[in-house]
Amino acid sequence: MEDTLQPLIERALNNQPGFLEFYLREQSRLPGVRANLELAQDFSHHLTFLVPDFAGEVRALLHHLVRDEERVMTNTPGEFVLMCGILGFGACASVLPEWRRDVFTQLARYARSAAWRVREAVTLALQKLLIAAPDETLLMLMDLLEQGDCLQLRACLAAVSETALLTSAQFITSALMIQRVALEYLHALPAAERKRTDARVLRQALGYTLSVVTAASPDDGFALMCEIATWNDPDINWVLRENLKKRRLARFRDYTDKVLALLA
Image (cartoon, rainbow, N blue to C red; front, side, top):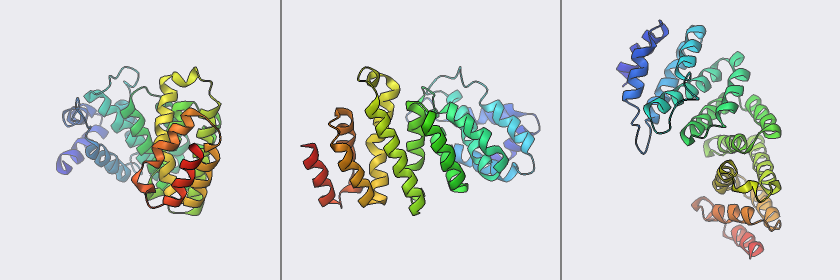
């Protein structure tokens, strides 16, 4: 894969993107259960080495790969090409600070996709930004929280709820704040609106993200759980029960029993 991908990328940067796109489609593993994320990550990794010297050419290539975003069908090779473009934007913005604001705006738009694989690509792209520039990216995520919809809040949640990122007190505090904002957003939604697909996607994300962040900061995480357990909200209670099932919280029996007692 390595020997094949590099020359195809170089050819694509010389205004011949068709060969690369054909290769990505052929190797996508779609339609299927699991897309070829290893290839998508390898592709984005290659671009990080090229973009400092060929920024214009890389940008043109990435725009070519995402050009069909509104027409692409889910679980198709075309969707994989779009995913590669999204990941590529995130990877390149991680090494080019001047790209970050514009790329983040793009990712916020892609986060509203009806296709779950596209939303996952956004999550991975945001995590590349969080690794490279955590403070700057967290600020942009906080801005999106204030004005975003259900799917954009879901993107914020998924991006920060990664164990490998939860290594500093400041990051964990921000991640917990994002959990709280999303929980309050869901709690404030009228019952009729909670039946929408986007609201259900947000609820599903909260069903695992809260436990990821809580495992990194048990005192604060379980304090938040105990607080929201008193809201007497059926969807919030579902979120709590789903998180309490997660193996990552099994070692915190005293805490989980306290939350379960409040739910009972």
